[in-house]
Picture: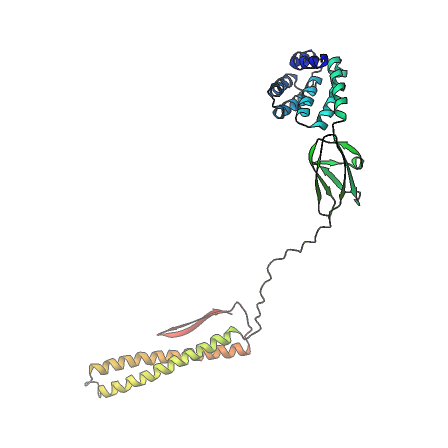
Length: 313
């Protein structure tokens, strides 16, 4: 009981102990402020929130008093392996500082915790020399394999990484005071990834007749059809005009209309036959010399003054 009261008194007067130390590394003033914040949170039962302040204080100016405050909070939050490490460190630091009460308290706590801290032994079967074993995000060297190492109680994740192999992951849970051995295995070989290729360009050669053949003969059929039909109609109109207009001075309105319509139909007929001839020539050219290309485009145009063919071949 006397030792417990001494430890509590030391924790409460940590600021005075800091000021009497001769070590001035880092930022002692900021370290004192951090340890005060952490101590107040710990007193309020908020050790999870207090731990970061103690850790920061140690970074700024490492002291034995900070270490025992940190270790107590870690023990409260069941981080037993972390607490054991810091009690051991506090014992050495107190000895270096000449602080007997803290050294005595740390020695007592170290012995009490050693039997409570669980230990985990990791073994990897069939692993090559370059295999990497990671426990909770921390890589373990070859010297750590097949060795019982202290860990905190609770859940842990183990990963085996080997080049050209899938990661092998295993999750385990270990209880306070338990000794557990875990055998890990290398993951299977990674599956070969098929090379990514771009879209294959379409073959411009369609293997069939050239579009000139279809377009040309199509134009020929349409042109000749139009020319024939309008030609027949033109002849009919010409007959009507002849009957209604026996001479230039004696002509009815029906005769004039028939003559006008006949002239227009005759022009369209002529254009149709011309277009048909052009189309037939294009079709013959496509059969004899044309090469089929998927990019060939063609457009036919007809008008009262003539016809034409436009396109790319």
